[in-house]
Length: 518
Image 1: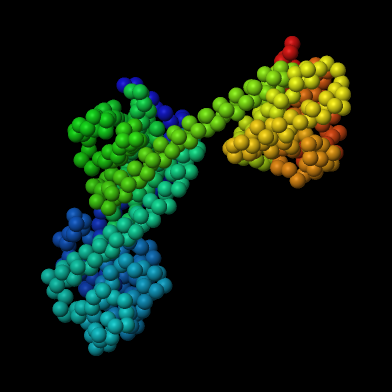
Image 2 (image 1 turned 90 degrees about the vertical axis):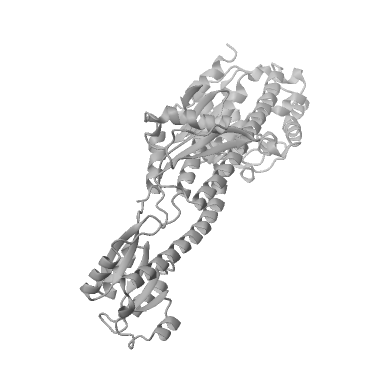
């Protein structure tokens, strides 16, 4: 199999920057805040819990000697799991006010708050439990090393469980939120699609402060007719010596159902499947094992990415078919009117360039250019002798040729996909002053694209050979267009087109107009 790096040369910069934002610092400890104005109590707490471990994670102690200092610590460390809080410090109820601050002002519902006091008479247990959102109340005299261990373990477990629940909630929200954006990416380039997919997958592995997952490496690969294409990857991943072996293992696992051997223990392979057939995979290497929640989420999302990729392919096929239909219709019209050789191609280019000059985004301008190619499709219904007549048309003949606008609109009106082209075909001979045809309406009431086509159509006709005239010099045609501003043409469109013309961006296209019948 041939391996192709299908990403553009600047993809490292495009992908690495957002991934670096996603790669948050990993956590390997439970943060414990000890708030007490007695240094000996803080020291004793650390000593009593020095060998503590839960879920393969040890403790990281953060100390505060007052409620004021503790507020700062809570702000600096929003991922504190448990706070052991003394009641009486700089004031008799300083610890209780700290509880209120954490819950109400900070809105931190996750941290487990354990009140421990050496003066239970000042803060009676039942009153504190009834009036403050705490998770436990302990008299310091009963907090032996074993009791402290039990209290802390229960608090951390509760914190961990809340984080799992929150991760489920965030994960579902993240998937629901990310799904529309992934499907929107399906309407853009495949490069953007795969980059977005990899970023979302890695983002899903960073949902929870309780989870110290951080995917440092990842790659998305597709395979088509034995051609392996690397579509997206994290910085430097495919340059590693292990990359070829990883690729082969993933291919065997996804395409042939063989168990992967030699991959890192924590690695995950997410198959991309369309119509029950594998077409590629996502490979990631987290720092730590994925939890069941994380694994389920990324597998769900990978399936959505597969569906979106299928939609992307269908979308591309539909667009390709639509563009082929446009080109065939345009070719029919141009074949009928051989005097206008290459006219529709040039009009496409002029329309797009002028639209962009007027602030239309590139994608929309491209659609306008494509639609402009069908502006004269109605000429298939005009007799050949009129289209090829060397002399001036009689009034009767002119009335016949004017019908190409309504004929074109009728042809294109059978499919709503051609609505934009239909409007252009119908209205591109209307004038700014309302003296055009077929309806004699003010052009300012029409879509901008029709006003653009009106200008560029006349310009290209002037500089091109016709049976009844020789091509005009570009400067003479430029002057005629400017003189028509405010009467025949939209002045703003004329201004934009002249800017494009003077910039030299369409010089090569203009030259082809002169060459068409040489």
